[in-house]
Length: 111
Image (cartoon, rainbow, N blue to C red):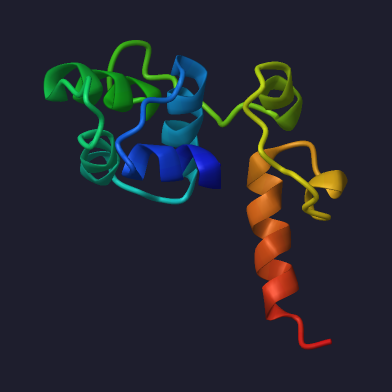
């Protein structure tokens, strides 16, 4: 996800599934809708009305009111959207949100 978010911050477009993944991940990290929209505003194809609708839909605030979750590592690998490289934490997980938990745990250790 770091690569996807980096591409957004650099104003580089990312595929639809990557956009969905970023929004669901940032929702899980407690970003509010406006913060996510601000990140996407850096893209050349940005349309605030469409972006707001899509982000609010993914957050469960519109449409079916379903709150979507971040795709699994398997789904991201299948779509060529996994940028894990040689990160040892990635070998231990099946879902990107697990990465955050393990990363926080490893940073908090003093061994």
